[in-house]
Length: 359
Image (cartoon, rainbow, N blue to C red; front, side, top):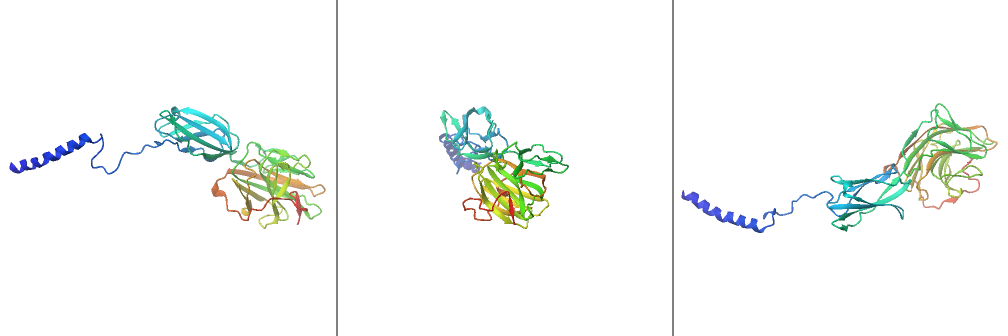
């Protein structure tokens, strides 16, 4: 029995030391812990993290979602358009679930760019605002097949548009622009393509008329020639040349890319014109070939459509539009500019015109 009594004699002081440490240390703290192993609580900071909306959205009454802040009794959120505050609301903690808080917008937002932020009211004190987050409200994607229908599209100016089994078409109006557009929405960042075919319309066998896709357009029409403005137009002629133009708010036109020959154009046949617009960047394609890129911040949103010009005395002409498609663009769809776009836009020079031209 002596060996056992000896070991018990050694254990008694150790037990007493552990009991003493337990009495003097805060409850739940171990004398042997090297770090605080308490798990973090999601959203336990004073500042909410903004979750959505971000980037480009198509909902005009979006749901604002942010991370939940522990111990908060209410939140304040603000929505700004430029320097104008369009929404400022305070909501209770009941808008929160386990980890996030969500509020449906009480205001129908116009198309364009916005920023928003949130702050939390914790234990009687408003905590710092979150960083601003940005989003863009744009019209939704669409696919128009134009098979005996112009549903969702209207004539903007010039002559009438007619339907056919597989396309819409117009013969234009002498010395006027004729245009068709989608009036449902303004579009902000997008990838827009149109398949079209122009026949006839030449003047004295040397002058070729032009046909265009139109993007980020306004709602005005020039009474003198039915030109649609402001906005950007990108088009081609059947002699194998393309050009890009800008109409300003007064209907004055300036050239971005003058008439330039391209082997991507198929004369007197179907051609697909495509514009990718994202922020200030524009990429222009003909039948899948990138022909021009540039950056400009003048127009941030607008309508999309198609237009053509007919000249008095020219041969009988017809523009057919097989289909038009638009998807909401993201940064991955944008390419680096092909050319130095630092030059100032210039008025069209003598002999240069968006209406068409001579080879």
